[in-house]
Amino acid sequence: MLALLAQAAGAQATGPAMSTLEAVRQALSIIGAEWFAHSGDAPMRFFTRLDYHQYFIISCFIFCLGFYGVAARRNAISMLLAMELMLNAVNINMAAFNQYWGPVITRAAFTSEESVYTNLGQCFSAFAIIVAAAEAAVGLGIIIAFYRLRKSVMLDDANLMKW
Amino acid sequence: MATPVQMLLSYLLLLGLVIGVAGLVMATLGRFYRRRALLALLGLAGLFVFTTCTLLLTPPGARLITAYFWLFTAAVIGGALGTVTMRNVFHSALSLILCLLGVAGYFILVNAEFLAMVQVILYIGGIMVLFLFGIMVSQNILGSELRQNAPQAPWAAIAAGLLFAFMLFCGLFMTIPPSPERGRVVISSNTQSVGWSLMATYTLPFEVASMLLLMALIGAIVLVRKEDE
Image 1 (spheres, rainbow over the protein chains, first blue to last red):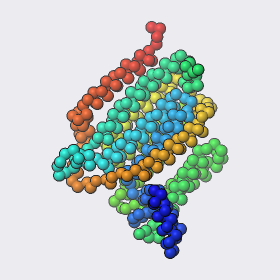
Image 2 (cartoon, each protein chain N blue to C red; image 1 turned 180 degrees about the vertical axis):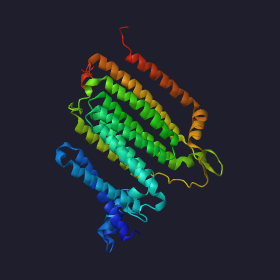
Image 3 (spheres, rainbow over the protein chains, first blue to last red; image 1 turned 90 degrees about the vertical axis):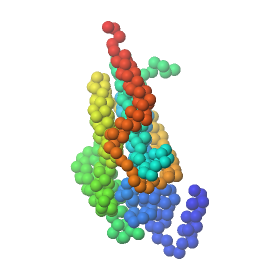
Image 4 (cartoon, helix red, strand yellow; image 1 turned 90 degrees about the horizontal axis):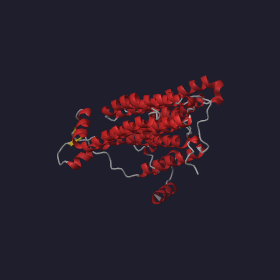
């Protein structure tokens, strides 16, 4: 990466007439955002050419929002809702990557001419949904038992084992 | 290379997105309560500009999928933001339902129709209804005047931001092999193929998962049962 940066700096120094736009494009292409750096026919490819990148970035964002919710909320039910967000982020990623790399897995497994579209990621997402259902049932059971005990669902009140 | 019209459209696209998101977010904040109609209108106009420019820049064959993708993205991100920021837990659960509907749309876009149906029926119809019942049973959290964030919320936001930056860094610098040439891809019916996989290839995980569900069912009943009878 350092080599890339040095190369870019050298190119900027020696280039005879580089517009600001070109410089911005080059800088963006260094950090990997090729959609903004427009390697093809249209700039802002991020918004117009759908690929697995968009799904990846959005699922990252949703996962971090879920993490924030789990860490910042006082309410146990809100925490469970945020946990559902994190599980869904993982599901988006698995389904999207399955679409783009579905054929290659089967081609490695079977030595046939045609590549069969495998659905490993989709099966794993189905298992994740099953586990989410179990987690929601047990989590809500614990919350309702706690509510019977303390008449509250705030996690501040769960201080019995606090030293 | 991009023509000047394309360059203009693409910067207009970014401008519209920024104005749209900023306007809609400011319209929901309490501070700008008196100008919220104006801000919402501005936000909708910005999003309209964004949509138009995006569709004009997209190649004609992919316009429908792109439009649906950004529609579902708006639902997913808006729903997720509402889930973690709303004060009323009931509203929070409702915006999580919006987010889950958007995820079901994503599943349809990536050829996972079975998962989309499972998402709608099982997630929204089962788990979220369970959550809504749980919220109604524990009544005293419904007040919107309650403070919902713990004192460590700013630190949690910082940690989440750092995590997001780290994940983007890893994802963008990761050397992912290019998506393979499709060649002759045999795509059978999605539900059929998932069913074959679950029943033939992954039979043992399937059985373990059903055992887990049974254990969760019994455990939830035992936890919620009253002691004194």
